[in-house]
Image (cartoon, rainbow over all chains, first blue to last red; front, side):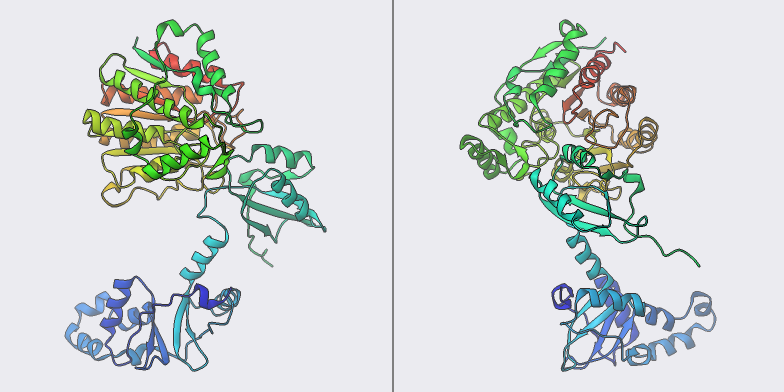
Amino acid sequence: MFVSKSMTKKVITINKDADIFEAKEKMAEHRIRHIPVVTKDYHLIGIVSDRDVRSAMPSKPLSDYNSKKIKDKVARLKIKDIMTIDPVTISPLHTVQDALVLMQNTRVGAFPVVDEQGKLRGIISVRDLLRAFINVMGMEDPGALMCIIVEEKLGQMKKIVDAITEERISFGSIMVARYWDEGKRAVFPYLLTQNITSLKKRFKKMGYEVLDPMKWYIDQLPKDG
Amino acid sequence: MKKTGFLFDERYLLHDTGSYHPETPARLQAVYQGIKEAELLSSLTLIHASLPDLKWIEAVHDKEYIKRFEMACLSGNSTFDCPDNQICQATYETALLAVGGILDATRLVMNAEIDNAFCAVRPPGHHAEINKAMGFCYFNNVAIAARYLQKEWGIKRVGIADFDVHHGNGTQHIFEDDPSIFYYSIHQHPSFAYPGTGREFEEGEGSGLGFTKNSPVLPGKGDSEYKRLIKRDLFPAFESFKPEVIIISCGFDGHVDDDMSDIKLSTEGFSWIIKSLVEMADKYSNKRLISILEGGYSLKRLPELAKNHIEILLNHR
């Protein structure tokens, strides 16, 4: 689960002396929101985001008023004038979990991935992590999701896995929801089959609650107060 | 009163899925019994299985895939491509006979010998991809019929309506870039049901963009939600597309008594859907409609569902 395996390796970069229109065009062309700013030998010196570019552009009402003066000013702006110096970076040897926690803590949408020599190796964004999450959930393979409520005690998962294995069904993934009723957990096996009917009956026979799909949730926001 | 064809053959029972599989020969017997006991057989043009020209299957599936499927059956394998797909030695031939019967029914409709037809076949087809068997399906019966209509009969616009409770991933993928075939599917929401495709934003690709429409339905919903979504999504789509022929992927597994899904359609709910499609065929397609069985696993409900379907096609109801 290293960042190096999930990051985007072909990074679109920009020079610090480029004008901001170049950044705007690159963002539109490649449909990206972050461009690392690098030296000739690929050392990271900053990052420019779509928000940096937007803030530097005149707003619509202003552009009607005294527009030439403002346009000239914008045209003179360079990437180095608007970029974030010393952005939050991550190492290729950090894990995907590190990236998730860091993203949640810093509220930054993309991290340049930089090696020990300070060279840019890639970029990892919310989009890369989403793709990894879709992959981990097995969503690209056809299958069906179930939800089983179990007591929070040792050995529950074994019984579930054994029952599914005995039905000769393959797993796409299995999730366990952390927030649920006191002393209970929700287990979500994603099964690579169309045929979960007999399995549902089996779980009910084993004394488990097979939850109504309209009551499923995998995450619950912390309660206020 | 309309002229309705009914495709059924005892050879469709030969595809043996073993003792623990829901897609059983008994399903088809239940369908047949329902129609027979209502004394409808004498009002119908009976169609039997036949072997098709392989070129029609090759119009949809890779040659290599067809060969691989044949070999898997003949060499006595018990599953094909994934453990869901239980096969026996007769499965390949049964699948061929299903296609052949469907093409015969389609030809009768095109020759105006019948107005419409219900094809009670096994195995089902709408999950089958160009080169992969999925969800009990091997040959995509509906897709093959659509290609046959295009190539043999020069039909420019085929409308496919799929109300099986599972999304017809195969049919959608085969035609997603084809603007001459409109694929509409209403099914249990893919986050809660097999195969995990058929989300609302899947609307076709390239020149086929806008010619695929999906109405995912949340678990627990039934007749009124189906009516609302079909009126909102299918009615205007076929109104502007004006299909020359309508093909139905007819799955009865959304019935409240069918435990393959959490959808709660009633028997009357199915009648409403089928009636709506027949009315659309009257309006746009010169009555031409071919309904092909997909899923539906409640042996208790299949007889009445099949009987009602036939009566609606005959215009008895």
